[in-house]
Image (cartoon, rainbow, N blue to C red; front, side, top):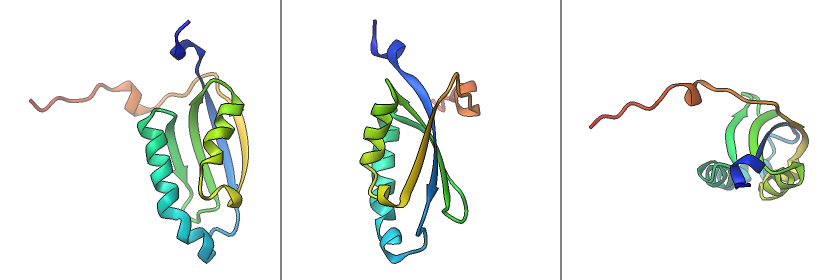
Length: 104
């Protein structure tokens, strides 16, 4: 069995606290760098933050919830987060639906 058939998607619902503290704000650039790396690797497919920075939602691709927790442990902001992980039956997005246009 290849890795793709073993992977599942998980919705991670995150409540963030102290979102406007100096310590939180200082970690935002490194948080974005970690998220960008995980997105490039295909381990995160969606990452959304509420305007007030108190909620965060992401879709993670992993073998199990333990692997999702490993991703979260890499987050510089993890000490400001309370996370709930739910396995998904499926996740659709417009980006997945439409093919990319080639400009050649």
